[in-house]
Length: 471
Image (cartoon, helix red, strand yellow):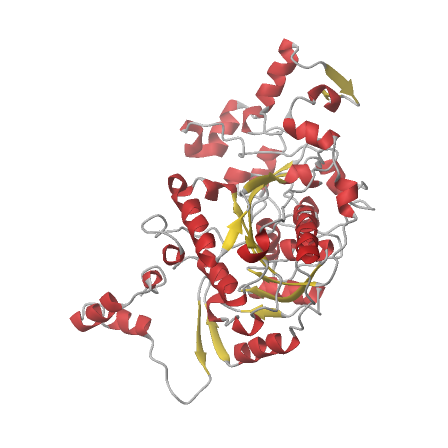
């Protein structure tokens, strides 16, 4: 619930709450912790009632930055109808297409997509925009300050489509980034677009049937002309916190034990060190000389360093998954075996169903899973959004629009692009006999030319500096 183990131990030592021991595990009865708001919410949850919510009509949605599909799958399970998804990474696109052949997946840079054919036809836009630095945030205000960031592309899609509601998702640190100026800029942008922002909230995944201590910032905005008289209610939590035991064995989440799957292996020296760490332990459980040698320079640094040589516990939720299961600073060792978590174990901690298969090499699969929104968290938020849409529909009844031709038009335009990718960027040119002028290439070639400096000085797009290609 956000309290540290040391705080919980003090509660026990001082008798703040009486402890009980069950199956060798000592803890507190939930009923005794009803003064804690999160526990009180779990004891009085409406999870089962909310799980049965159904859309009054088909709500068309699109998703940007779709990744391996955690958010998209959760929203689909809640009742949204995806008419289009966009993702830059090739392996992630293959994952989406293989698992949902009926989804229109547009692979490529979102900056090259014209969303105007979908104007007035899409009800909902969602996107976990990458946590890219807002280098211009807070210097002025509103729409222009977000240029050069991928939040700008989400905002542009909203401006071009005008959905009833849109949602953005990001790491919790965004709320305090740059002393709050970044989130203030986002607020200004949303207001400038003509939307009413629901007060943002950081949701703890462990509250929503996810066996993982992951926290995400959720931004939800309602178009001003339908915002009056409707109210968004955040999802109720599940009745208890899930653990790795619930993820790896038959439970209320999964009907079977976790299936065998591929996974990376530890080097022998690392395996020898981690074999000395007990379940739920870390570097502090190692002999001092072993710990010093393993940690190197980190031994002298401050802080708890509790991610180092960390072995997970079956009776606790997992620590937040990263893009790699065996990074030294964020170790996630299997609770019972001395090895990193497998692909399927990783996926279960993110509550992906076992039928959801990931494409690409092993590194790409771990990355897709580690970057994903937990499916059950997305499902819970999606159900709350469906309730909001039903409320809007009752007050402003409309028919579901046909997006078929609009999506075909977008796909047709995308097919005319020749795509050249590197690890982080994409450049595209229209198939034509006329050669397009590439100012970025000219800048690299003539960067000391005063004439080019004059051109750049007149350029109004501030992101030109952040997207300049390295020589």
